[in-house]
Length: 356
Image (cartoon, helix red, strand yellow):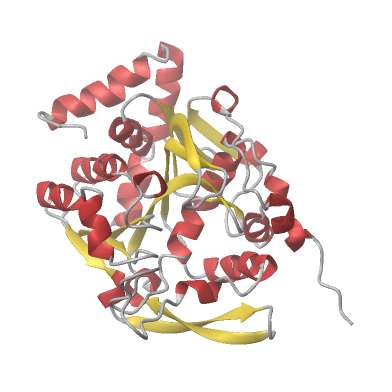
């Protein structure tokens, strides 16, 4: 974990020193992007940084968007949502180093006071995962509250299920649904065994459904305890892609931070293997961030259903030619990720179901 003994020195070293190392003209361009007036024809902007310190590259990528983020937060509560799909495997979960970069950034712009780290872990007690991944020490250091969404107030929303073509109720956290909050998706860069890739949007949508206290996959579960997350999958690859799109219209991050320092390839979101990618992607346009991440993973964007649906509906920018990359060039950091074993089957979403 990075130690910030002198925050002002850290800001100067990480932002200025790190960018100057990329070259003076490039450095000047980044400062204009971060601090200058908006372009006459604004495009989506995505920061891409590479380095050997996870917290540092997250911090530097966030600083590029500093004025926009500070303005958008205003007086709102900041909710940082990590991706803890499992409570006992670090590779599949958001690393404390990524969270530290985010928290240090919020501290640098005076937006830390009202921040919380909130999650509903998929396979067991949320606070057990927080402890396993070192979040307790981080929360104490930055005086932020850790929130278990499973103990929070809920609201029922309805999703589509391909098995019976009927709407099904899902209990979701009110904290995540409250649009008065400023939600940061602290996501992992991973392939997926149902929707090709899981990035900033899916982290938010599949973290919002809650489970009963005492629910745990496998041994030790409380009898009768239920988990609403699987309901969102809709009993098919088609339904999951559609439900992600449908829910994205009211449930999406205001800021995407995608940690690709250690990516996951193969049978994600839990059972994949490590990709030493050493990158971080940040944007206030979550769809642009996810689009760039897909490119960096060497994935054909046309095969990621839910992102294409969202782009077609105008929920963000999915056209790479209309996204301005700040920091490192995408082409320099493309690493083709191995897909899940069932990748071909996942593409069924591209073919309409047969009607008898």
